Structure formats: structure tokens, C-alpha cells
Amino acid sequence: MTTRLLHVSDTHLGNRQYGSDVRREDFAEAFEQAIEYAIDENVDAVIHTGDLFDSRDPSLPDLNRCIDILGRLREADIPFYGIVGNHERKMDDQYLDLINKTRTAERLDRNPRLVNGEVALYGIDAVTKPAWHAEDFELEAPPEDAFTILCMHQLLDPPVPELFANHPLGDVIERVNVDLDALALGDYHETVGTVEEGTQVWYAGSTERCAKDEASPRTVSLLEIDDGELIRREKELDTRDFIHIDIEFAEGDGHAYAEDVVDRHNVEEKVVSVALDGESTTVTSRDVRGVVMDRGAAVCRVNDQRGGPDLDLSGGPSGDIESADNLIEEKLAESNLSSVAVEIEERVREGKATPTGFDDEVEEYLMEAQDEAFDEDGSAEEEGAE
Ligand SMILES: [Mn+2]
Image 1 (cartoon, rainbow, N blue to C red):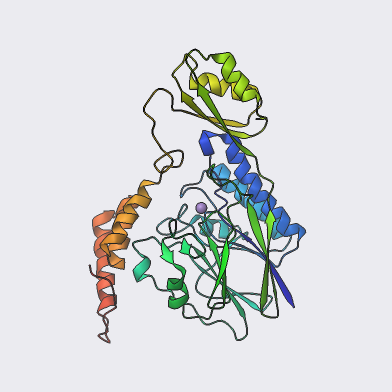
Image 2: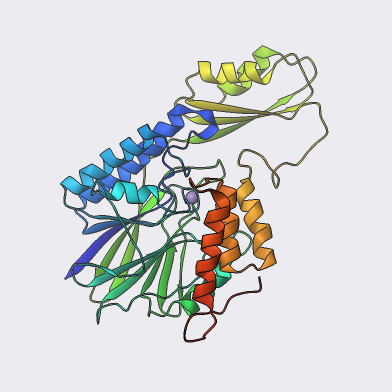
């Protein structure tokens, strides 16, 4: 028997990239394309490795749209299995749980879901950096002879280049108690893969460009599992083109000059980023945006670097400023807190007080943690330093 799965990831539904509703629609359409492909290919199931939504509070229209698209899968009798990514992660219930109630999606966990009686799917939601060292990677044992696939949403090296990765891949392979045949990953938006100690490891990539440096084609991965062997093929999605235009101004260059430079490019229906360099002139970035949009661009973003000192912003905050949450988690990870402290910090940061308030909630949580740590058999749970 052959089992065929479609691996989709990082769809970021609701992303109004560059403040554009056109882009928001693009993200929905890319997801739609992936799901249509799953239906055309009549796969046995779709797996999604997180960041289904771009934010932890997706709008009602985004949620509705998502359920509509997933409804088509359901009509085709194809189950959709997902995990929670860092972008959409909430403290308690997840939007995926809500969608689950419409019976169009199911959340993977540490118990295997069997597809065709031969492929065991597991899922571990995105683990924050500070919680990583205390995370429990224990999975329920799979049925004998099952092909095991674990879905996660983390930046692991390899195949993610060390510079962008958060943890070594070996961490996962070592800490998971089950013999994994495959590790299907999300979070990294490029399509890359590797093999480690007999485990096939790969990222399906995002379905739309979340940043202009995500230049390569967006893909989903078609998995064919036959007799314990996995063959993976990438399917390219048809997404909107990005184009970059540099306009170097000399003194006295006016509107006509900007038009000339723009006219050397076909901007129609594209996402256009323009960098203005050189001398400050009377032409404003708004003027340039007008020129580009007049020529039929879908979205235009202008970065005016004229006149000022030559700043190299490539490594710093440009279009995609790292979120404050990331920076906080970065610092917390360095302080090596216990899982209890990490959880409390997260609840405070999410800032959603229960009706009884934070005091009671935290107190209750601490009591539970205490009970758990010093339970009857006297075995204190191993944790990092408080
Ligand atoms: Mn993502």
C-alpha cells in the first residue's frame, strides 16, 4: 500500500503584508492553491506544520475563509492535521481547536494518528526558546511497523543554516524516545532538507513570500510512503512576483526622471519595492509610489535613503522588524528558567487576566507545580535552575 500526504506549512493567513489587502488575499489564495492541489492529487491526508495564521488573533473573515477552504478538503474526505506555530500560538486553547469543532481540522499531539493503518503522525507545537531545555519530547509508542512522522515548528540546524537556527537538530533526534522515520518541519520559509541518523528531515517552505528576500519559488511537499520508504517531491505554487527597483537621484532629477527609471521595468500586478538613493530632490517617496501604482503595480513600498548618511539597514530592522516577543524570548532563554517560571512569564506577557485575576491564577499554578515536583514517590522533577 502507498500512503500519500501533502505537507503544507507557514501559510500565514491574514498577513496584510505592507499594509495591503491585496497581499492578504494573496496569502489566502496560496493556501487555496495548496488545498486544491491536495484534492487534485487525492492525497490520504494533509499535514500543516504551523503558522496557519499570521497572528494569534486572526480576524473573523480570515478564520471564516480558512474554514471555507478546509471545508473543501473535508468534502473530498481528506483529513487535515495541524500543529500550532509561533506566530499564532496562544496560552490555552488554540484557534486550531476552534476549527477542529467545524470538523475540518485536527490537532496533532504526542499520540499517533494513523493514516492508512501504516503511517503514524505526531505533532509537537512550537516550543518557545526559554521553554526548550525543559520541554518533554516523550511520544506514545507507535503501532509496530508503522512509518513514523513527527511534525514540529522550530528552526533546527541542519537543514537551517546555523546563523538562523535556534537549536541543533541532534537535540530533537536525541530527546525523542520514538524511532523517527521522518521529521516534517515548519518555521523556516525556504524549502530545504537533510538526513540525520536515518531520519529524513525537511521544511516544506512557506506558501507565500513573507519578506522580499524569500526569493525562491514557494512550495508544498508531496510525500509518498511505500514499504517504509519515503519519497518527497516539491510542488511549486504560483504566487505573485516581487521586483526591486533602485532609483539613484542626482541634483535636479525630477518627476520625469523617476518615471523613466520605473518605465524600464514591468511592474504590472507585481509587489514592487523601490529604493531611493543619492541626492534629495523635490520628488517625494509618495510621488514615486504614485508613479509605480499608476503603472499597475499591485503593491508598492518605497524606501527613501536620499540625502542622509549612508546607513546599511540590511542587517537591522528594515521591513520585517523582529517581534518584541522574539527579543524577550531570546533574553529569557539565556537566563535558563524552569518551565514553571517560563509559563508564568508567558501568562503575564500575554496579559489576559482570568476573572479571578493573575494573583489567584499564578498561586494556583504554583501550588500545582509544587505538588507535581514533590509528589508522593518523592522523586523531584528535574528542572533547570529557578
Ligand atoms: Mn512562519
